[in-house]
Image 1: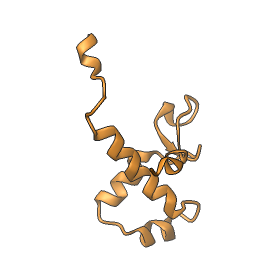
Image 2: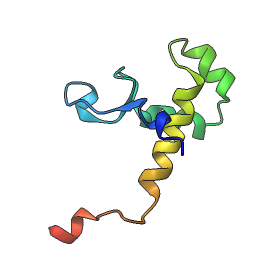
Image 3: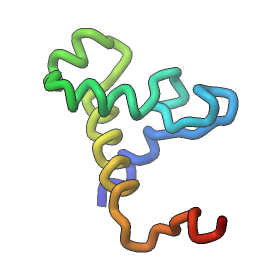
Image 4: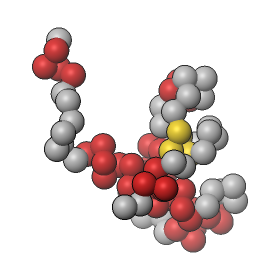
Length: 80
């Protein structure tokens, strides 16, 4: 599968309060998803953020697909 893309998504408590980010940069996955949802194309994103690579955008979308796939996910509210 495209698991090599997921290596571009990192978690670090010292960066963006531990939110998932792109390659240890202060660029949260949520920010990328918001740009795509707003209708920006890959080319527009890459032009506005020169340190972002096309694979970073794909990685964010893949990460979001895994997060929203309910199969095998635990819902923490069950343990509250």
